[in-house]
Length: 198
Image (cartoon, rainbow, N blue to C red; front, side, top):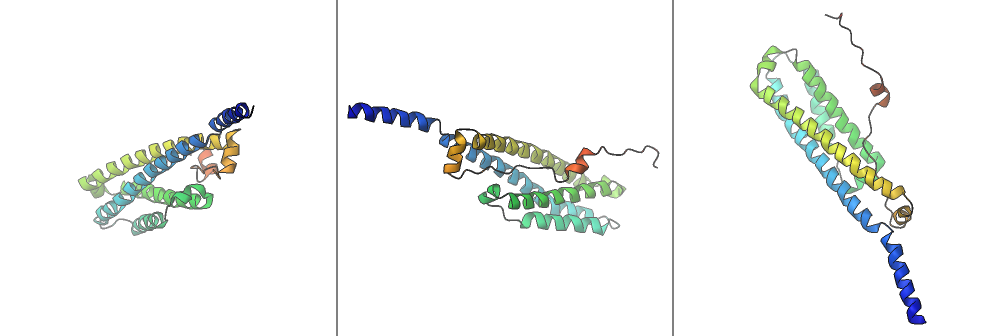
C-alpha cells in the first residue's frame, strides 16, 4: 500500500510541476533579456553615429550652435545611464532610460529638420551618408523595440495567468515594464497642416 501511495504522490507531483510554468519563465526571461540586448545594441550604434554627425555639421559655419549643443547634451545624458539586468525589473530606472533615449531622438530629429535649411550641408556627401546610416539605425531601433515589447508581453501574460502566476509569486518573477509613448496626449492629436504658409 505504501509503494502504491508513493507512486501516486510522485505522479501527482510530476503533473503539478509540469504545469507550474517554471521552465517557461526561464525561457521567456532569457528571451526578454536577448531582445533587450538588441535594443541596447541599436541605441549604442546610434550613440556612436552622433559624434560623426556633429563633427560634419560643425563644418557648416552658420549652423545653429544651440541645436548642436542639445544633441551633444542629449547624447551625454543617454549614454550616462548605466543599464543592468535589474533595469528591466525596475520601472523607474527603465522610464529614466527611456526618457533619455527619447530626448536624444528628439534632438536628432530637430538637427535633421534644421539641416534642411543649409544647402552646403545637404550637398555634403559625408553628411548624406551619416543621415542614411542614422535613418537605418532608427528603423533597427524600432524593430528591436517591437521585438522586446512582444517578448515582454509573452512573459507578462505568463506571470499574470493562473496557475503560473503562483509560480511567479513563489519565485519572484515580477511583471516587466514595456516601452510606452512618452507623451501620449500629444500623439493622439492630429498634426496641423497649413498649406497657406510660405
